[in-house]
Image 1 (tube, rainbow, N blue to C red):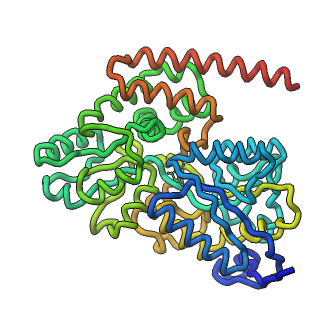
Image 2 (cartoon, protein in one colour):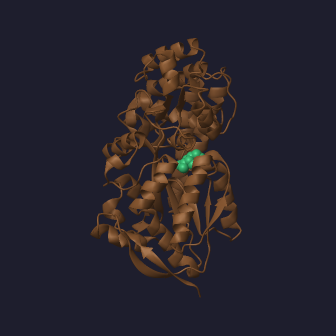
Image 3 (tube, rainbow, N blue to C red):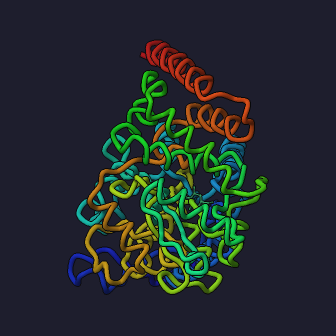
Length: 428
Ligand code: GAL
């Protein structure tokens, strides 16, 4: 059997301020297929960079990439692989699905890498909450994305002689000036998950983090009928006038258009920052990042994690080694810099981050926090899909009224709640 020397990074973290590794021995003759949905230029670079770090440590990473922004396709492929008895060694999962797969008993416990690397001490509390299930560690965290991110093309703002808008009134003025200068103010796709990604930022901006939690985490039917929810819908419809002709372009195509100067602003998770930087643009010099107007005090987050599937004892030590590698400081800094996200470590020198990442990392540490619905952090698939469908319909069809969306969502939520109570009752 081929035996490779591999470093045990996190044991050393405690000893030497997260910077050096100590070796340990580990068997690595089993290749590790890692299922993920990172296919854009920056995502690809980030995944390749990570694969190289793993391979250098004797972890035979084998890429299993399923295209499709937001991970819809990857989630379907994962289900069918598990159902046909061929689960990957590792898969990218965010939020809710982590505990759902863990509940089915399919995930390898990562208690050993978690202890070796002192995750309890080093990770942000919201990250810990996401990757623990019934007192066990069940996922290895990679990075934190900020969804309520707005990118602004500096050259275009300077050409139109306007400053970055911090309020919606200022946004309207800036958009008017940009349009008068022949510049498309806002890039946006009509792909359902992209519309929902924008909309959840608007709910946060209109209602604040507590209201956001009432709507998307507690799923209180009355919250859907609240004026703040109606305002978020009004805002979504108003923003349409600044988007130009809309089609269902992938997000990375829009990021490229923004980078080429074809739109002045782009509201998207900060993976878009990674894409823009992959095209050679630099924060401050070429573009600015800020929170979506009205949402600056809060961090709307999504956490990328890798889970390991159990059932194959021969590959377990390699899976643990990969989990360990992910939270080392060099990997956290290197991967997240390319990906556009920020490290999951709560103690680090913020000067090591670019200005966009710094804002996000500080806001994530301070809170208040809002878990992304669209990116599976807030609720299960059924509720998420219901909201996305209604919001998408409202966005593409101007005949759909605000009160109709409110009524439908409140009614569906009531139904889903009733149904899940019934199911829980039957299970007991
Ligand atoms: C998110 C994921 C990001 C990025 C994005 C676009 O769900 O957290 O890592 O890949 O989708 O595909």
